[in-house]
Image (cartoon, rainbow, N blue to C red):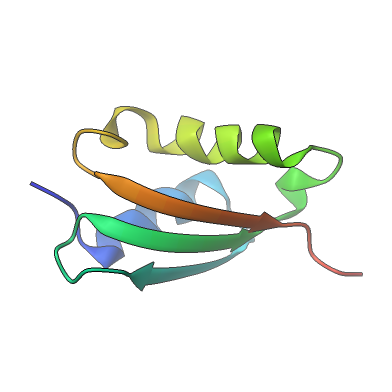
Length: 78
């Protein structure tokens, strides 16, 4: 199963428009990634709520199509 880096980027980019998204393939198996998302949508939210937004965007893909994801979220610096 799994998903490509491009597929993951497309899903995240659709969910977090006007954001900076960096994706690193951790194992070369289309199943383990690290993402860094810098978005104004995280403004005023704690890390747990920021990460929940990421999981909400991924929906049922997380845990099924995508096995492991390390998430780093940030609000843009002004």
